[in-house]
Amino acid sequence: MVNIVVFHSVLGLRPVELGAAERLRAAGHDVVTPDLYAGLTAATLDDGFALMDRVGWAAISRRAAEAVRGLPPSTVLLGVSMGCGVVQSVLPDRPAAAGVLLLHALAVIPASARDGLPVQVHVADPDPIAPPAEVAAWREAAPGAEVFTYPGAGHFYTDAEDPGYDEVAAALTWRRALGFLRTLPQAD
Image (cartoon, helix red, strand yellow):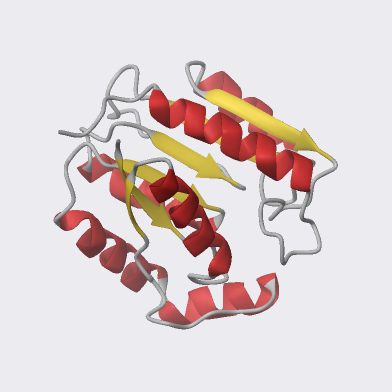
């Protein structure tokens, strides 16, 4: 069992993140899902970006920092799309994080991150949020990370309610993610 925090997408804390948390709990992990928008959600990416702007990145980052404050230092940081940016904002203050799991986007892994920090990435191919050229550059910059791309899948391909949903890619993503989590140091 590992401790995991799941940071939601730009659309807010929705059934896809809550379902992911339940999937992870069913695998024996302790999972928290902070609501960085305080109950607000959006139905489209455009509305989500407007909501993110209205809430403000400073408030989102502050809420994320507060959400992880009481969690074990080795908590795994999992981001879903915008949540990957949230992972990027809290990671510098979480040097003992057991690992980083990024779904549907990339995040800068700071140079201050410990050597050998386990990182796994899952993105659609192509994806306007994580274009192939950025994925290639990211892969070069983080040679120890596992990077999986899913050709033909939509951006939110793990969300059964999204038009870009890809059942096969989603199942493979979760199989790989759960395998990744099994390789991490287990919580006490």
